[in-house]
Structures are given as C-alpha cells and as structure tokens.
Image (cartoon, rainbow over all chains, first blue to last red; front, side, top):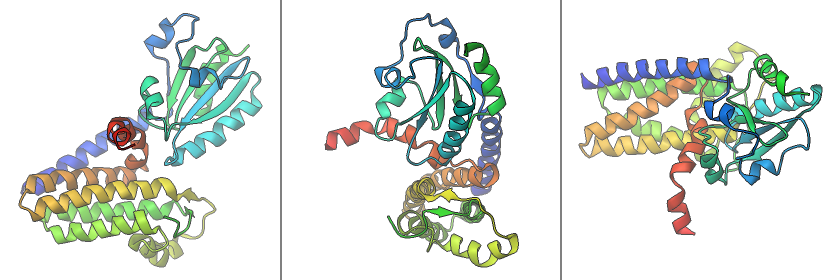
Length: 142
Length: 147
C-alpha cells in the first residue's frame, strides 16, 4: 500500500517539476543583482578573459555530459554570426566545478550575456529561445 | 567505455525511459527487489557497455523503430550513458535496501530513479545529465582529498 502511495506521489511531484522546468527552460533572466551592478566587473577572470573586445559576448557554459549544450552551441553561433556586435564563446565547466559555484550556475547549458565592460546583462538556463533572447539583447547592441 | 554507437536515434532513449518508468513503478508497488536488480543490470549495460547492446535499445531497434520510419536526428550517447550510470547507482542502493530489510531506503531510492526516468520519458528532461554539474559541485572535496 505504501508503495502505491509513493508511486502516485512521485509521479505527481515529477509532473509538477517537469511542467515548472518546461516553462522556465530557455527563458531570459535578468536578476536584481545583475541590474544593480554598476559598470565595474565582478565576474571572475576566467570569464572576462574570453570576452570579445567590443559589443556583447554570449558566454555559453557547458559540460561534457550535456546534449542540450550541442543544440545551444548551434543556435548561439548562428545567432552571433548573423548579428552585428554579438559574439559567442563556450567554456567547459566539466573539470571546473568551482567556477560554476562562483557564478551560481546549477545546470548546463547556462548562457551569460556579458557587455564590453564585463557586466552580466542576463542569463539563460537551457536552450535559449531565439527571439526572446535577441529582443532582450537588442538595447545593449550598439 | 568505447563500445556501441556514439550517436543514436533520440526516440530510442525516450522509449527506454518509458520502459524503465513502467519497471520501476512495478517495483515500487510490489517491492519485489529481483526486478529492481534486473533493472540495475540493464542500467549497467547501458552505462558501461553502450547502447549497441543495451536491452531496451535492442527492443527499440527490433520492434519499435521499424514501425516509426527513419529519422536523420541523432543524439550524443555520452550524456545518456552518464545518466544510465546515475540510474545504476540508485538501483543498486534500492536493491541493497529492499534485500536487507531496509524497505524505506529501497522505496526512496526507487522513487528517485522513477522520477528521473519519468521526467526523461514525459518531458525529454535528462535529470542525470543536467545535474551532472550539481553533483560535481557537491562532491569535489572527496576527489581533491584523493589527489
């Protein structure tokens, strides 16, 4: 009897979790901390060192064991090649969990959009939604 | 870790996740641990021998794929095999729990594996893959101590 209850409970919880994750997946997030940050960069050097000299850089954080990272790579590199002032670079966090901790990244892919001053504009968890991402980046380009 | 194809039809793992969900549901309801042990072996084959010989993959290729028609879509197997390894871990803990009379432990471990399999089947969300980073974040001290 306990087993049946656990089974039903697990399926209900998993369904709720799945629906929540589906709705949040690929959504652009601008955190309060990000908005409050002034021009000075507080991102670790591992990130600021890979930024393109001008415009906005999409820093994609990936791991080896990550299928959606591949889809994200294809989407972002295409977006960057078609958009003036937008660049795409990828960092592998597989061997660097401490960097994930520093950036408060819980899952891959997570994409950070960083402007030329090294300030994080927004971040996206999961495969980004192309139009939504582009719209959010537009004010920061040029 | 090199046997089996490096890329597979993505519908295969979804089918396997549904079969896994069904098997784990039966284990939860009946508490019959030999079935969980069999599922642990299936996980182990997927994780360590690859999808070329994984039982549910063979089922898919033999009975399901011919009815669905071909697809050009392919998915990397490295994340999937990692997730099978995570499933194997939970299944082993579950078997130990049930077999030693710690039924609560067996139930909880099976429920976790079921939740992961169900999320994969119903939402195409690979919990084992996505939480890889999380697992790494919370286990670095042990690895550093070993170095």
